[in-house]
Length: 226
Image (cartoon, rainbow, N blue to C red):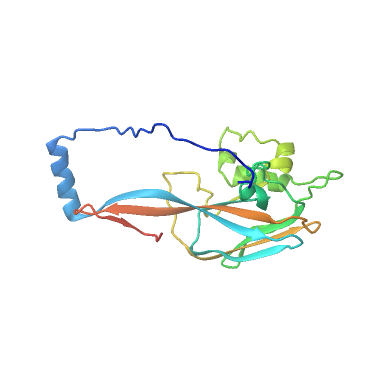
């Protein structure tokens, strides 16, 4: 927040509402029998958000943005560093294009997409439909009769996000579908038409497929750290 800010938040009352259920003894007995033989397994989508600072005047190659398990989906955007750090006069959700003219990801050396995005966000001859289309292909809505309420004009002005589905069959949006877990490193490369004049933050949102297990002693086991 700004140094001269006088805003305060007071929590006057707080309640936690929890639904309770009474389980029959027969169901509890069957659960105990099942847990004595194997664990209860719950597929889950784990989410990580990472931030990287890109200083004024720099293009950037971010090595090992993700190291270890590779995600099933990645969404990347760029926001002003001051807005990110709480300047109340700026919008931290204003993802500007910053004149990006090259964007690519590399998963274990494999370029994603196979041909890098090279948008042109200039006012004279704008051409960024391929980047705009990633909001559909990367989120899975291009298979559905749905939209995202972001027009092409709004995309360039304040919603410049790059979305990618890393699954072999573009199934990241399908909760009932499971893919083999892959491990490696993810590198990000971005270039700008002109040197940026302000420090910005790269926001990387990543989704991972994981499993949570519960054994007979009610111990929770997960296949990831953190």
